[in-house]
Amino acid sequence: MPTRPLRSAEETADTASSTDHSTLVFSPPPAVRLLSDILPDDPLLMMGAGPVPIPDVVAHANSVVINHLGTTMSTIISQVKQMAGYVFQTRSEWVLGVAGPGSAAMEMAICNLVSADSKVLCVVNGFFSARMAEMSRRLGADVITYEVEGNQAASAEAVERAIAQHHPDVLTIVQGETSNTVFNRELPAIARAAKKHGCLVVVDAVCTLSTMPLQMDDWQIDAVITGGQKGLSSIPGVSLIAFSNAAWERINQRKTPNTHWVLDAKLAENFWHKGSYHYTAPVSGVLALHEALRLVCAETLPVRFARHSRSSFALQNGIEAMGLRLFAPPSSRLNSVVGIVVPDGLSNTEICAHISNRYRVEISGSFGLPIVRIGQMGEQCRVHNLFRTLHALGSTMRDLGAKVDMPASMSTLEYSLQTNPAI
Ligand SMILES: *Cc1c(COP(=O)(O)O)cnc(C)c1O
Image (tube, rainbow, N blue to C red; front, side, top):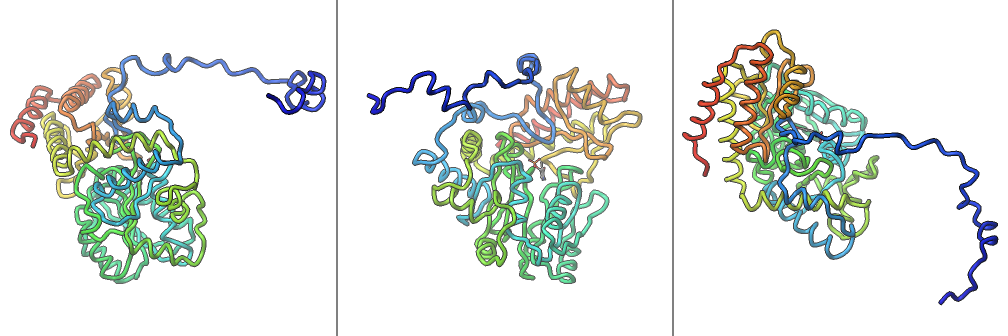
């Protein structure tokens, strides 16, 4: 029952002129195509450098919206942190999510641990590791880059010399450099060397986490970042970060406030540890991430790593048997993303367009390098995806006029899988 008399229509019109839109002139809405007309009927197989295919349970979770605060969300957040702790192999409680791409997690690591009075040593292998240097520079830090040339992995000895020379507060390094498919296999020794000199270690594991070992605690890493859409086979847009206790202490002792409000770890702690508000979490994406992490835990890390290396080696063998060349030398070759030298006379743009249009398989070019890249992250490492992708790659090369040996390639893939059975 209303406690006051209802207002008449005239009174309403008088007092609420803001709801009378009859005098406003609107530009017309745009005429657009239906989403179903834009998206391919036959979904493309996502075999590039990310995003990667997602399992049905992840897709389903991504369609659910719940309250971003309250007991249901708290239970989910608590499980996401526990499972992420397993994937990072850390007992640190300072695991947090972030709304945004892998680069948002990267910026969260950098802007919380680096300020204008910091000295940062950035090991740069390529495009993504250079991004951490750029973010540090933008904070006004004194940034020294250690550039690794020629598709080599960073040498622990050389990095330790640079640390001893410059005494940085923070070292940044990528585990797998997606852009040129280089694997920094000496990461454990590099992290150990940095700790010996009292330097915090930030590791970009966006393309590698859950595809190969990364022992955050044992290797004494202070911040690990990852995205959703690569190794974890979740959606893009929700990422994870873990800080060590030493890193968290450094954050607590900051003398200047973080200039990035959204990425401030102490504010993020409100949501990720105290069940209260920082910003509205990307609820559906967090649910998707929960499911992706649950699948990693169910598979277990050792079994998942074996699946990834078996799949990637078989693919690499099949590519070489075709007559194509892999970009990175075996000593620094990344398994999570495989780089293939573009044959003479072809371009990576035409290869990527043809394999997508004709064979419905998406692969990636690269940032200025004459290579194409095939991802081996999460759901990409399934036997049926390997056969379809290798066949599509070989057929594309043949269609475009490159000489390839398809029968040798396909039988080598099969042989490689058979001689290296799944565990
Ligand atoms: C993909 C990737 C990034 C960037 O991730 P976004 O989600 O695109 O921001 C950073 N580092 C590495 C190693 C990557 O593979």
